[in-house]
Amino acid sequence: MSQNKAASWVYTEQLHTEPESVTQARKEAAELQISSTGAASVQFLKNLVLLPHIRTVAEIGTGTGVVSLSLLLENPAINLTTIDIESVAQGYAREHFAAAGIRPSRYRIINGLSSDLLPRLACAAYDLVYLDGDPLEAEGDAKEAIRMLRPGGILVCNHALYQDRVADPARRDNVTVALRNLGRALLEAEELSATVLPVGDGLIFAVKR
Ligand SMILES: C[S@@+](CC[C@H](N)C(=O)[O-])C[C@H]1O[C@@H](n2cnc3c(N)ncnc32)[C@H](O)[C@@H]1O
Image (cartoon, rainbow, N blue to C red; front, top):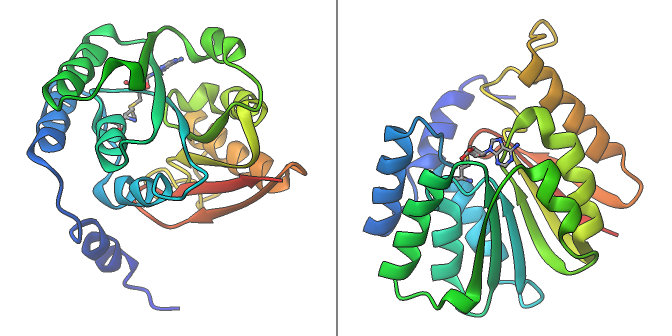
């Protein structure tokens, strides 16, 4: 295998252009010290919402709306629920949705902890769940996401490779260990068919059986 993976990663991140509103949301996220999903990963999610069976989407970790705005703009037929603990960041997302003319009936922005909110969301009611919240809560959040998904539904988790730390067994900090454990758990879960995609910071891509 070629050793020059870093150049390939940079290349794939630069392939995609985004609307000005998404670029603005990235800037706002950076000002709030919130990391945004990379452009190649956003494009991957945008491709998923064009699949005909993807209509109901949930996101854990709204941030300033980089992903949620991108998905709502990509396919006017989807509905999206997005949750976050940071109301200021969610305020930016709400402003972007309104400025883009997205009907409020197409989205729910819910403020609170994922561990409190996810158990209240309906079973087998979602076609796509994007998990991008607190890595230390990710394993519990993923269990809830699996419950929320319909058969054939898709779970995508960000930071599967977490700054190249997950693949390095010498890295034992809490976040890296949590994300390594998440990957193992999802790849072993009987109710899923899962893989890790080397896109952006790494994506776990799983389909519910
Ligand atoms: C990586 S950012 C999400 C970025 C967003 N998905 C995007 O690409 O624009 C992670 C977000 O998770 C939120 N968060 C952290 N812990 C959380 C928790 N326990 N419950 C809900 N949201 C949480 C943070 O406030 C932050 O906005």
